[in-house]
Image (tube, rainbow, N blue to C red; front, side, top):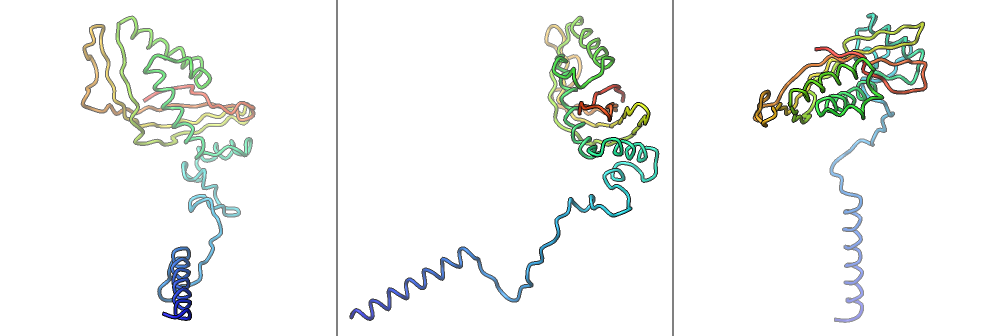
Length: 216
């Protein structure tokens, strides 16, 4: 085989290598394809801001024009950084944290997030358990539902209150002094509903909302 043939084969090999390399990097296209259209960035289909239209962050959680919607709008006027969706995300985390602190009888870590009245009510139940020799074994499984059910705002004091309904699932057992189960089932999940009210001074530099009331 003469040198010219060898050189030709080398060039062919290099060309094949480059073609394969380009295909691996750029991919392949088959048939006619329309040029890609770059869509303008949006916060999401439910968060599109329409000039003069309703605030979807409010109407996603309260009927437009309702007292609850008006209270939320007033909160936003005082504190433009307030966002209902973000509040509910924070409420979800606060619910799990406070609930598990109560079940485990360790309230110290949640004192900044609960009112004095709620602290005293929780502490009283924890003391009763200890006096009866009961111990709680609880594991938070998750939330099946979360919804804002009420909103109130005092424009004079700038005090805001938001009431949230939680439906949660727990692995939950109560044992007596002897270790026997007196409440709950190790093979079942406990489902419960709580209605909690959080309060906040919208003119305050403190960003924390506090749990001020509990119910079912």
